[in-house]
Image 1: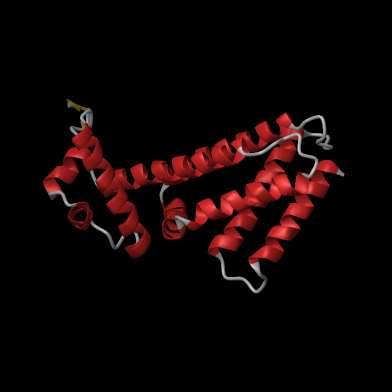
Image 2: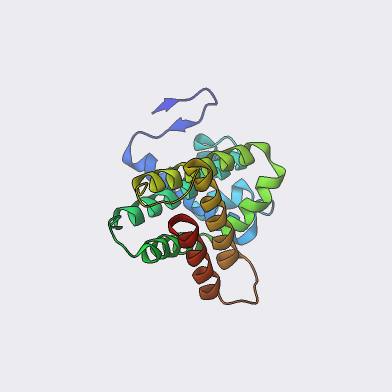
Length: 205
């Protein structure tokens, strides 16, 4: 294994890769259940079944492993979106069914990481680096939305596709967050139905 400038290891062998993944998995669970500020590196190491010294051979501090967890979280969400897009027949005339499928996929993806998302929302407000990483992730989401609209550009009925991609992305993100993370007086299916109807009307009428 080689040393990086900060003296942490970049795992090359299977055992080391698994050890690092165990630390990341344990950290995500602890951050989700206890919160970032109530979790320390000793607890993460114990939950991963490694020594504290071993933890520090992979991560410089607690924030470093939080960032690694964030990357894992973002990659998992993007993988789910890619899988959902691959299932879609873009020639399908039922545009509402296509939009509904995408929204359902996003809701399911977020539900897996409810605890971590709540902690991430807090960290995003207090840490500039976390905010920067999330801004980058949001930009990826906007680009994916733009790509979807461009695939369907013969039928999309908007004057400015790039602006429309941002409008759609922000609308979907807000409603998905409301469905998964917020207390509400209206059933999730009602919110989803209105979101799908709104986007379909906006893009295709």
